Length: 447
Image 1 (tube, rainbow, N blue to C red):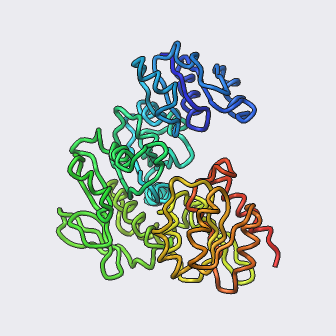
Image 2: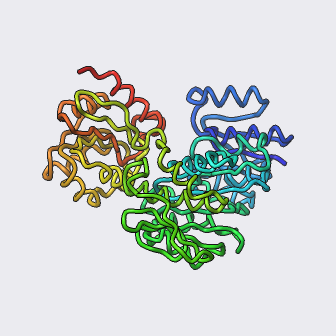
Image 3: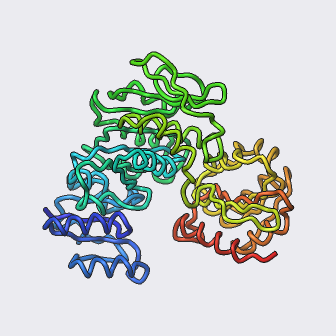
């Protein structure tokens, strides 16, 4: 088999290295110039993999039996459209990797927001309960990077993006979860309908023996219910017949076969702040129950789990002000959850590269919880124009200036919350890079 991989980032490199190790012919085609991909270039050369940088040329197609496309490569990229015209199969790295670990139990977690937290939390619960679980996928470690070393009893907890789902054929999770669906990645998908339908592919190959876990409070997520064939469980802030829900300040589960409510814990005992983390915790708890984890193990894990880096991550307290890194909030909906998670006054740092952002859904929260907005990046003007007549709002021209200005405005008892509501690509490689820079600047602040 001759595989061409489009894209030399983490998942593309992992797929190329896996294919090569299995004895296949491999070619990698990367749009960025080689001087911007030194790590990838070195790895591929060391593995004896031929590659091109700076363009996707005809060479990417001339021998290909199958194309493996990296997340985010546009559907309308000429190399993808031409592969489709020539009837060359185009699959995602996720589809490619899964065929080499078909017997490992797999939980697929998708949604617009909360994927990384829920993926990490689910693996955390399973491991604390004595299972063997590995968090992989869109979370940062590609599935292709781990399949060669897996034990058969390892449960794969996979964060799955819409980009990855867009090019699946046979991918089938034993447990599939959709957390929520709100507008995101519309530059790629074009419409919210297309984006939602791509998310629904999580369940497209499931059977009646598989499990489906859905957010009953999210209409776009719940719309898949009639199409999903697996055993359905729901999570909600209101009682449901089968699943997890909030009731009288408690996290409760109900399963038809038991015909009774099982109280797991008080909601305020969940360590992660915010209503969105109640939803994430309920979804993770249901996934763990699918693998027969006991309620006490679930409770202990939810009480001890500290969260993930760059998602409402506490950085430091300086002069009575808490600094919080929420760089992973790359869309408006994620920032909505962040702004609703704290009762203290907020100095909000926002901005980056927009994706047709509509900030109006944040207005009531901003009026209620935010004392000042510091806007930066490509969206600085849009944010300033939207909020300057509502509350105090300033524009800055650098990330460092944003932190300094926020420190200037913050008073004892306030929170400086960096939750950008935007992508990072105007100034940074990714949201992780952006979050690391934020933490570095904050940790260098002086009294």
